[in-house]
Image (cartoon, rainbow over all chains, first blue to last red; front, top):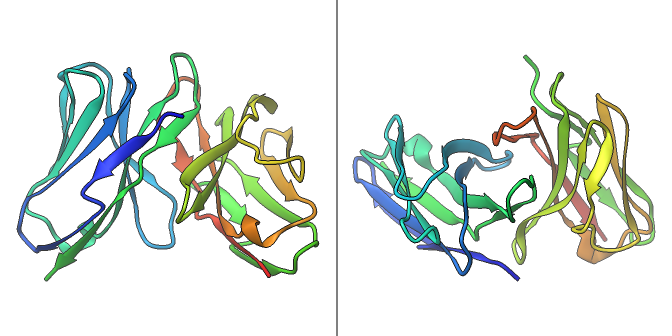
Length: 112
Length: 113
């Protein structure tokens, strides 16, 4: 079946550093979503991307929809302790459906 | 405004027992989703409803799992009988219309002994 592979699986960084993570698929996606999950909570939508090549920012977060439509990237600038959590990419399985597949997640830890 | 409400937050039960998880979506949202999260399989969509009608239940693992939405403000996910491999965090999420933004509840942590 379809899978969304995220890398890296986990990362430890120093406060203030920039972070980059990506998500790849064997299939084409028409929409990419990025979620963050804090410990003990449900995922929260950070950014939604709708077309190939699109670059969208939300504060210190910037996400890009890869031009092949098989990948997406998330960058966090000047990381802070509250950026700790698991970041998931997600996309709908086909058009006109709300059935999303979620990536394997990137676990981020920020050292103060 | 209250977000998605789930109960209980934690459930410990013995194998073979019936488990019922509850969800109250955000008022006005017409889509409701049930997800399961495990270390091995990640976050998986089990079933989703639109206007209280199940649209896609292909993610429901077995006949032991059933979900209902009797009205716009309440849904249940039932497991009967429960098995240890059902241990996971179960999330309910809701959304409005064509919005891609799904709002997740805090989850129910289920442990089946």
